[in-house]
Image (cartoon, rainbow, N blue to C red; front, side, top):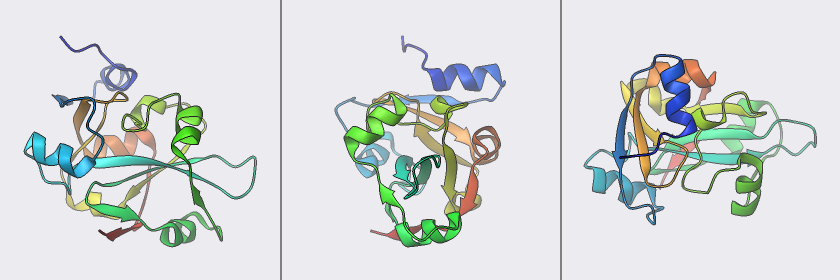
Length: 160
């Protein structure tokens, strides 16, 4: 039996339906995880932590498809700032309290983050996101995810 994560409890608390999919927790490459789960890498969204240049501003949680890369210039334009930087693995883990590979915007509701989701998600009915723990993905509707996380939609990626 799978231990319920904070993300699962948050979804259940809002009565949002989801499906649980598991994979070996030592896997970290989102494209490989998608292939193992038998789903399109376009549907598996990884969550990245991005830092604003000004102290005192909220860090960003940016959800993008596994098969793309974050374009920091596009994101900075969407945020309305000149420059952003990726958090290091150590910074991401310290800020979120979650392990890299298990960072989830749903597990961090109510925390001081601003969520963004790549615009490619609007063409999908559902996505797979981390459950807040390595080895567990959640299938959730795009509409529910955007509403729950209050994510701003923006074109922030480039292909690999």
